[in-house]
Length: 101
Figure 1 (cartoon, rainbow, N blue to C red):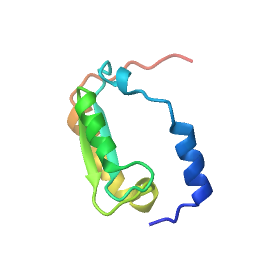
Figure 2: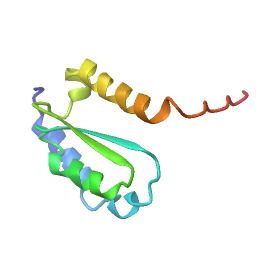
Figure 3: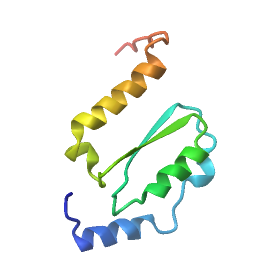
């Protein structure tokens, strides 16, 4: 696990105080994959459960033993989860048209 600089932790918390998107999340229509480390010292795992209950077409994957930087520390594992989610939800859909430059 990467160590967290206390000052960085403080500034991150200060940035989040008073701001929430919770009231708007129920309006999301996109399929959403929520990934979270179960040992994240910055954003506790219960936040992932709140997101899962609030975003209609979402699924939550808690990465056991992982912290806040699981995308870096477990890149392969993260990529497998993202690839599997995209394949399951988007492989059968019609390809999006290309946008001309």
